[in-house]
Length: 480
Image (cartoon, rainbow, N blue to C red; front, side):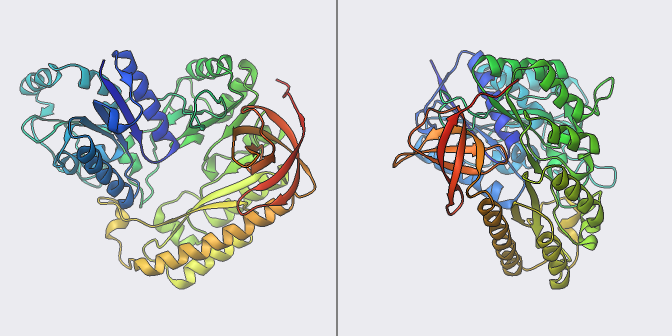
């Protein structure tokens, strides 16, 4: 029986897509292989958020073809949607399938007559085109981004990419934080895909399409299946998670989803991943603060603390709006982990504007940061903006903010020494300690070896380089 291997790059949403692809291939009768080296079919589920992400995908394709030349390689995901022509030209690639058709990749790989059927359809249907279109951006002010369905049989690889804005499918399956699925810990459940924002630096809306929500009954069904399988904490994720429900009929809000999970599932802990500042409503803050079953953790993307840069980025909030949200979260949950995505080196970011952003960040109660260096994406408005920042300058600013984030994180961890925390054990480590994660997103090492997927009350004895050192007090059970 043919073996397949799926390798996913990038964010939680891409990882969830990859898990859904594994379900697809299993339903076609294929068996999972242990690695790309052992597989007959290798599927690369790509990211394209930065130039480095594109480079990683190309390097993986070349390595897999070199080390397992008999394997068929299928490339899908965001990079495949954005630049199929680049990928199709790489040696070893058999199929290139954009996000527009990701829900059919297993069918494409399993059905030898699929290509011929599509070709016949393209010859009869004027809405389909035999050839690659101009990979611009699908926007009224810019060029179409592969707005016609594209079928290329004469190219080195069979290529299928369609209009992502006509795409209505949402594929996702839980993704497990542990390397071993037998250690049931923290699956990631994607409930939303796509984005209706148009940040000037971001390619993601044009490779994932408009915002789409998983229907509430299916979310409840997936969560209950996870509970039945023994999972105790789930992580809700999406491309623009806080917009969940806005496209449903009748329209719903993200808080409705969280309440429904509390009311209709037995999940013991819900962790909410990244939610834009505009979607941290007073109601959502109150809900997270008041429920012991929701992790005290808020990830609120910032990008810049400079008002001028935020405007150039086309972000929908101003620094004072953002400050108000963070203050409300911190006041409602003083011990909560509060994190943000921050970008440095955006076009037009002068030394003065960077310092404005750094000072803004310094004075807010962040406990961690994800710091990114700006990466120009072809077709986005920022790619042609004047005053591009030299790479060496951007990298130095990245270092400055990472050091600031490390200081804030260490101070946050230090504040818990001598106190108790509730943690969930992840997997046993080495040298007689067990890895765990606290409700407020602190990595913890517990002395002794303990079974994975257990709630434990621990006492914090010290601070490590990136974690806390703790001793077990008692095993606990969360009330649902």
